[in-house]
Amino acid sequence: MVTARTTGRTDLLQGLEQEVGVMIRRIRRVIGERARAVHPDLQSSSYLMLSWLEQHGPMRASAMAESFGIDKGAISRQVQHLMDLGLVDRAPDPEDGRATLVSASAVAEARLADVHGDRRRWLDEKLGDWSSDDLARLVDLLGRYNTALDS
Amino acid sequence: MVTARTTGRTDLLQGLEQEVGVMIRRIRRVIGERARAVHPDLQSSSYLMLSWLEQHGPMRASAMAESFGIDKGAISRQVQHLMDLGLVDRAPDPEDGRATLVSASAVAEARLADVHGDRRRWLDEKLGDWSSDDLARLVDLLGRYNTALDS
DNA sequence: GAATAAAGTTGTCCTCGACAACCTTTTACC
DNA sequence: GGTAAAAGGTTGTCGAGGACAACTTTATTC
Image (cartoon, rainbow over all chains, first blue to last red; front, side, top):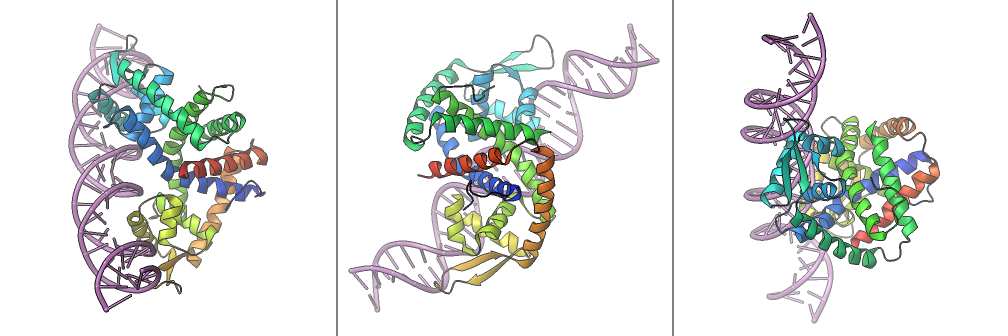
């Protein structure tokens, strides 16, 4: 198992890649459960998008495609999915007739608030022994890592 | 944007979830490129599995399913894919007639060594400003996070 | 020695992103 | 001011890849 004891940078990258690989596979379950808690038919991927919308406010589909680094066609379908479930609202962008602004609906906000409560309980259960410092460090490092991959 | 300044634990979880979501989407591209560097027809997912095998030595399919937390059927197909490309070897498990031990082939080891060189150059380019400490911390925290998700 | 469990394989289904063609609106440029 | 190029979205098609379940083969258990 790769741990912090591993000193070489090459080995660290190796470890990073593997943890990411494991994470990609494992996280699906957790996100999936959370998505179903918001709405039984909500897809995992759309849940992440909805959560993003809730925190960042109304935005264009193209901006989301940019943020997530995925195809605009995929975004379009996700938004449609969220519309079907009544979890997002769409409004024409006053600044650009081609664009529409997507935002989390009131229902979605309420459901997400519930889920955040559940998540808090989950946190206490699974990550109870983590300090807020560790948590903050992980979020910070992940954010920097994501940014670094961008360029 | 959520940063380390965010203090509440609930907010931290929110940030973690979002960074993980972004990461999952973005990392696919990088892993995909790396996979193709090992073999043009190698799938991303199989690359991660191969890399795991190289570092952890021969293991059963069931052990991999356990490690990755995915279905044994998926593992079976991935191993088959790697066999088709000549990147893994299979040997009967002397301790259990039902099981087979899967290991990275000599060819795979050689290719992976090349790719590790490339990855090192990529590291210097993208994460050049990261300290080994930061890298080690990220790997460690990710590992602990993955473990926490398990239970 | 029959019942149960575990290791793999295979078939079917679903999620989800990539790529490309296309339509609409906006912007740029002459 | 009119045409060309670019940007925002939608939709069709495809492939990767995991979930679930049925099934075969070999171990284990009582």
